[in-house]
Amino acid sequence: MEVLTLLGTMVALAAIGLPLVFAILAACLATLLIFRPGLPLEVLPQLFVNGMDRPVLLAIVFFFLAGELMNRGGITRRIIDFASALVGHVRGGLGQVNVVSSIFFSGITGSAVADTAAIGTVMIPSMVRKGYAPGFAAAVTQTSSVIGPIIPPSIPMIVYAVMAEVSVGQMFLGGILPGLVIGAVLMLVVLLISVRRGYPVERRASAGDVVRTGLDAAVALGTPLIIVGGILGGVFTATEAGAVAVLYSLLAGALFYRELDLPGLWAAIVRAAEGTATVLVILGASSIFAWIVADLRVHQAAASLLFALGREPWLVLLAINLLVLVVGLFMDPLAALVILVPILLPAAAEIGVDPVHFGVMIVINLMIGLTTPPVGYLIYLSADIAEVPPEVVIRESLPFLGALLVALGICAYVPAVTLALPSLLR
Amino acid sequence: MGALRRACDLARRVLDGVIGTLLIAIVLITLAQVIARYLVMSSLVWSEELNRLLHLWLVMLAAAKASHLRIGLLGERLGGRIRTALDLGASLLSLALLALMIRGALRLAELTRFDMFTGLQVSMRWMFMAFVAGAAVWMLRIVVAGALALRR
Image 1 (tube, rainbow over the protein chains, first blue to last red):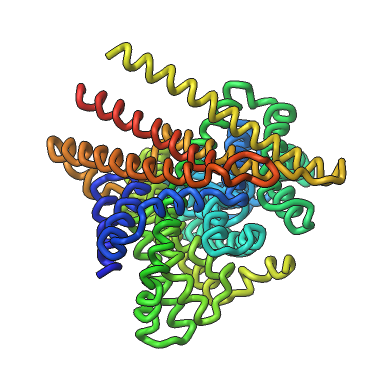
Image 2: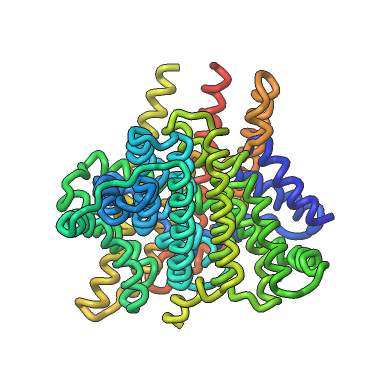
């Protein structure tokens, strides 16, 4: 009954269009009034403020800002040029360039939407001009954008780290190999479809071209090196890495590429602040939710439901993944993350799943939801750029979705893919 | 109507100015923290606490003007009067929740008046006052947006 009140109120209010932060607050308030009538309501703002008041959360605003600065600083074209020199000559050249650009881009911004918007605007028209089906071009763009929040920096990884009380550095390192695995399976699908449809290859770049474009993109690609190198080397914390990345992006955009002006800088600052606020208030509200979940032992009910078929880890992981996939079809990844983690993490811990492995798996799973109907935002964004109906993008995305599920399966059932790099930090 | 819009534009610019200044300050303080540790070989005792406080103010003031995450599967499919009624209901519920939270935060600010950030020597009540200030501006924005929508 408690679970029904909590989740039912939240889903019903969110469905009629109430901002999610208020839907969560209203559901928590209703649950407390009915099942904990004696509790002083000051607990609501107290948990809300405490949920936002953790030093590590500063990393969110820094990485938002660094990404905004890089985006406005003219990096997209340079990254695509370098990716073209590297993989343009493989069958389905521009499709491969699209995926590799997403991998590079993900090391800078960590937002799937920014990735689709920036790379899609350049790559989709170029691919169409070269004879690729517009739906195919949009499908490659949107599905490869999933890599954005998996390879560090990543806002969902920071949010998960705070909720699960694991280190942000470990989560960042944990996302690197899975992100590359996703890139590899997507490139394989591009190759297979391109062979069947006879999509072209580009001229092989000379070694000189690779070096020239590489040097031009090197400044932009320095961001992931600062973050990963800084954290791995113990030079600074994930939060400080974010502030250093901001300074670096500012210098790269304003002094090196000379494409970032003062109005652009100010717009980036305000946008980063608003983006951060959107995430943080959800996190504040979700800390009340997590408290109620623990207080009413909702996670125990969830665990017994998950263990109904058996306690074999592979079976429980399968059940968790299916549940998260279904939720991800209908919910924004961040919203789903803050609601599902307090409920599912204890069950996963009980069968011995490492919290870093669990977190990376859940983030990948929820990101897939961005590319599927009915609420897959990336479908509509890429369809709009490609000027085709969303149905076409959905149809062309099916083989890529299959590949994403294979990658999810690899990451779920081969923990070493996620844990190999974080173990270097332990 | 025109005057209300002009006032909103001015308020938005002022809020942007405050938010932007807070964010720049947070970046500079964090960089100073790294520089102090590696170049001056001494850690700043106040920097983390000041950043926590400024960050809360930044988040709550930016939340007052940010566009917030919605799911809205049902609401988007409805049109006309039902949609307007739902929007109005949603605004009223949001206002009620914010008012309730402000009341609680004011009480917490009172309770923590004499609790101090040890390094910063500033009362912890300012954490809860960040919530009060941000939520009050947020309420104002919901009221103005509702008024503008109703006139349309």
